[in-house]
Image (tube, rainbow, N blue to C red; front, side, top):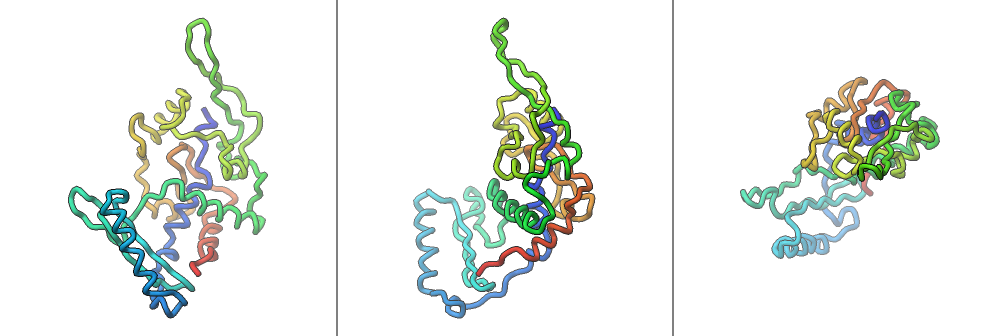
Length: 246
């Protein structure tokens, strides 16, 4: 099941980038007109969103608008918890699910641009545990009218490009129908049947980026980061050079 134990891939880099203190610094504020925006037009945003909330089509929203490196609009509408009446706040923390992918992809392509990694690099170059992986292949058993699974060597290694285009073969425990894969995830402590967002790791952002021994992984994998050729310092450097709002 080694193929499905390997996945502490670039997804973990997103946490590294997002959690760095540099990105936690607040933007300076300015009046909209100082950066070429209209206070009158920005004022239409909250009423429009409030209509959606009042109609029950949207529970809440947080809107932050920045231009030329300055924050010109910051509003929160609706509830963090409607049952308890807890109002939404502008500093609320959200889990953004698959929207981490564009952030990680930008970081990865910056590394490619700088020659730190190549799209054709095998994943095992950075995660040695991912070398010589096996694939769990279903096979129909006509005698017992059931599906069985065989472990066979992968035709080729997973590449960086595979991670970026969803062709790595790694699956989510709550989605895959492959029994051995689900069992391996459950044994690794990264999946629990019937719990969509189960995560037993209990890692804080500081643990992800606190040292060169940081453990990187994703809910769909059981492979933890080892010392690799692309260091955490590369991602710190990327965070400093990532495009800012204009």
